[in-house]
Image (cartoon, rainbow, N blue to C red; front, side):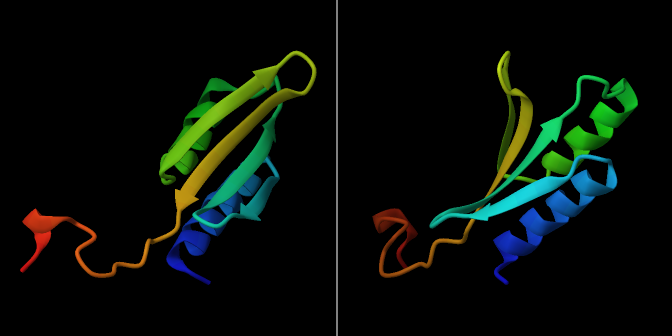
Length: 92
């Protein structure tokens, strides 16, 4: 499993340990983690949840009146380097 997958799996496991069963989904450039967030989450638990998703490259909360609240996190996959990807200033 690539490093991004390991990081995403660790975030998902931590969320699940906190009582938020998480789903992982692989994409071309990232791995996403999603978990439903109950209305009854305490402030202390929110802090722990935020600490878990802070390990991701991006995270957020999608809240709708129809579907409740879904916490999401994205861990980007490493992009293989070829040639002068960094541009002229990065060439040796």
